[in-house]
Amino acid sequence: MDDIHPDFRRAPKEFSVLPHVIEVLEQGLEENANGYGNYAQTQYEIHLRRGRYARDLENIDAAVHEIVESNYTGFNNSVQSFSTIFQEFTDAQSRVRKLKEQVRKCKNQLTNRKRNLKELWFQEMQLMHVLELINNMEKLQASPGRINQCLSE
Image (tube, rainbow, N blue to C red):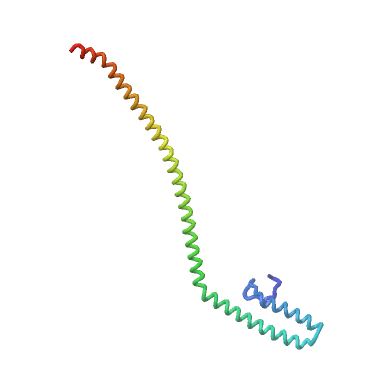
């Protein structure tokens, strides 16, 4: 960047391509003119082209500046909107991940409780059956006394 002529810079370290291209083209035309044809005519053509290129550069700069100025606010609003949407999307992804983890934990807890409930139900059924057997045994134990009582009456 430092070896570029200062005339081609708009501000320090800012390079404008079009003037540099014009200079390169002029050098090529001058080299051709030195070897062939009328040098004065070539210089005049170079001068005309330089003027056209300079006008074109000014027109392009003005058009770009106008486009930038007219779309600057809308572009900034769009960038802000995109940034906001992206942030909300990222937050939503994070919340979904947390929700999935919570659902997984709940599922594991419910599965464990289901096993515990089945075990408890099975244990209750066994105890009820044992209680029924004990009641039947008590009735059997009491039956000789009842039989004797019924016979004595």
